[in-house]
Length: 254
Image (cartoon, rainbow, N blue to C red; front, side, top):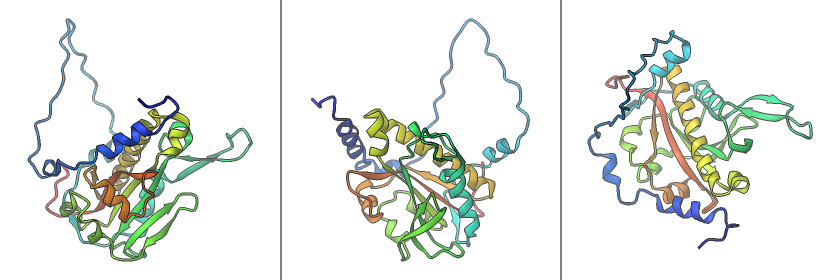
């Protein structure tokens, strides 16, 4: 029985024991049938009006899971827009009690604590060396972590590698768990995962806006992936990964 004061052990145990150690085949098998729920009631369902066409609605229709990428060059400005719009600082506000500036981003974060760190594995990005980089949010800059061709290093650790080997970038969302859990305890682990989902969808929409493909990936060998990203064991870990690049001509947007 864990003591009430222990706010991290249970979520850490779940995180470590939910690695996909035995279900690698699930990422290679055919798609399962989607199930839908309907409610039986005495009154008829209310038909919704067709919404007006908006810029955001048009972009959302262009988002799909791309599983084949073209080995073309990506402009650094395109990657910059994706990083800024998904987890970069979008505005500042004097909202803190001491009068200092609050650095605001485009996604909600429990307590405004922003527990995620963004790492980018890149290849064929104009003006950026192939390798692994850390996104410095405050300076909107990429800091080199590993200056070497890095994609091949990831092959044993990403279950969908064959689909994304020609992508230009893989964005890894790594959580520093205690940033949120020091305030919210065990439930803070949920908030971290929710935040990663917000960021991932923003990345996908920003990519779609630029006619790029994206693929969200939850299938990876956590321990080994964290090791090659040089993350601190038991303190931080990848919770989501998103590949971005030019879709191959054979890919469908449907």
